[in-house]
Image (tube, rainbow, N blue to C red; front, side, top):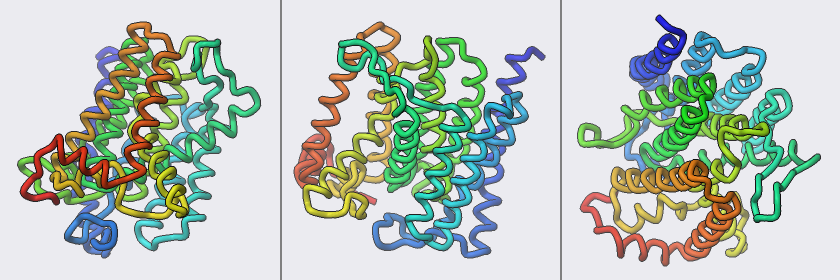
Length: 360
């Protein structure tokens, strides 16, 4: 068996490992009372085990190591995932203080940036006047960007299949860029994560055969996905000939970034704390407009696919980076404008989409 064929086996192993382990983890969690209770901002109707991340992360780390990934270069990422997974699991079980969650996120971000050398050194030709270099600010910028992305994925994990589905699409476009660029090692690592996520989504994403999610990602899973996207996005964007230019990464991750920025802007405009919780995220506009969870997840995931296609397609077609950047800025400003008044956003959604009979 050739090396390429052997490496292609690991994503398959990842998929079937998660597919087989999730029911076992679910059964164990139910017996221990480790469940996410309904109520408050929760949309589910029954206690559901948040064990997705507790399966995905170990499977990914073990199979990545077995696939031949260089431990010297990967250990900061794996260690960061372990820190995030532990903190998320404790929060899922005991609802720890936000400051402790932030500390874990900060440690994980430091691990991948300082020790893993995953950094945003430049933003590319962002405005058409030459490359924007971050200079001495590239380390704090990379740490802050990683923490924000961890929280962005965590915040969109509000309906069945959304955080996992959106992350899968983002990883898909990163994998596509790797295959075009011939970046085989990175492609295998991303493929293992995608396959693990696909195995989890069998139990988490609604479909004609599954009306409700039987397991959730949990904070351990959603935050681990955020850290993973930060790691892959930054490492693929490094070097004199990067696999993905920074603005293409911004398009791939546009939806969670834009939604987080819009929520912060709206809450500040309302005189509230930017991290205060509510039910006015992007996915809530669909649910509040009467769109079913399954349909909302499918539509939002499709939007994420199109946004990623703009970034990767534009890069491959040679569209100037500043053109992609200005288009991205216009898009995020439009999203913020619409989000400042959630009722306005809901009316637009209701106008274009027929109300479903069962919104939940």
